[in-house]
Image (cartoon, rainbow, N blue to C red):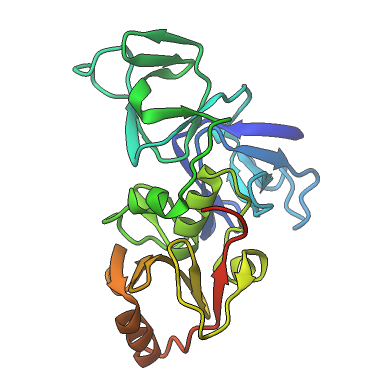
Length: 258
């Protein structure tokens, strides 16, 4: 197996080793490059049923079950917090799966208010064409308010701080690394300490990142609330410092309109 494949499952863990710890997650329709031979020395022969892949969205590498791979052509993404995949264009039909914000699908037709895909039917209201990106990443991230905190999570079922930043920027067709350290390096321009914060700015700590909603409020996935939550900026800074999270290491402003 080699070349580019797509994720066939609604959600799959990207594991450090075959059946090992989760580092990140991949959503339905996301593209991955199959790595062969395995750079870690683990080949398909020594780890049957697993493929070593590199995620197209950010270059993150790891292992996923080969059964989670498919081929196809994606045309739309889920724009709502989540949606359901149905076997028929009927809201009373028993759903096949839940799909998260930013999952990708190939729309091949329309029946009433449903989009038809090779996997089933999805409400049209929950989809957007891939070539129509969002314009406000904070508004995207706010759709996940209350989502449980999950280390390495990238979906509406569970997400962490860097996942919340990435999922919002990807919805806006803006590139974004998968972890907060590389995000601090790659994203935006540094703000002087005296510059007022604006919506769409990012605050970084060692191992943590948060969106700025307005001059006084953050939005972040965090282990204190165990959820995606709003928090007053001064309170968050003081709390994180008191919990040995250290001071803010960077204040960044994204380039271009947000």
